[in-house]
Image (tube, rainbow, N blue to C red; front, side, top):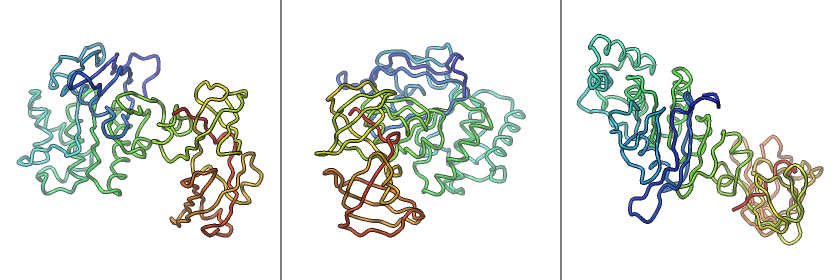
Length: 365
């Protein structure tokens, strides 16, 4: 990951995009990406993340603002002159060409000498562990192998930036997770700068140095995976990154070190941490992640302890998932490791739930 004092490799400066002149798909985007970083643009469908990638690739043009690659302004530069590698979800391989011919194609267009091009292709196939498949056509490969060929083709001409548009979306869960690790290792091994688009939160957390969370054309938060999970900037980020119980609440008192007292339900009070400045009486959401909630005896010594009613219990192998009613919220979820379950309660039972002050968040909608 690039040092914070370095000049960024990629910079979006006040970028906006509209297709109809009225609705902004991307609003006032400011984002800097440093050499060697793996940055993921994460968000739901229609949030603007893919449009940002397409503008960076040159397939779309900003309506306002500027995009820079190093010191070069990209706004009107055609895609083939940007020295950017691109990996698509559908692989976009030439079906009539062999694996080696697919890889050599971008080198031919750059007029690289044949001997050097062949050597580079074989080195890249070795890097992605496909040297034995050089003479095969894409139709003779599995989905995972085709995706590795697509990766190799994007990397073979040594671009200064690699863009990936949901490249693993067509793969099954096990293969997808395997390819995530392969991409992560390639990034580390080759020192790549990668901008990756996905709507899969776990994929973003697995791969990224930093994640930019998009909603309605606006970046809600840019941070490390750990910071996004532990210290979400608002309720949208808290709900989109992992699971979160979000309960309507009101600020009762502000305390030191960013903590506050919240009232939720008719009578319950919890201490929570806040990422923003709050005011007395302000309406917020109390956020607590399901795995941070303790059950029964393990809740008895905790400062925030409340009665609840069990609605549903689901056994999931390594943990048990409980759906409870707490303070009028009948979707309150708790995840408990099987090793911490003393005696399993039954639906309808009254149970005790609790959490630590530092695990609760006061979030603005």
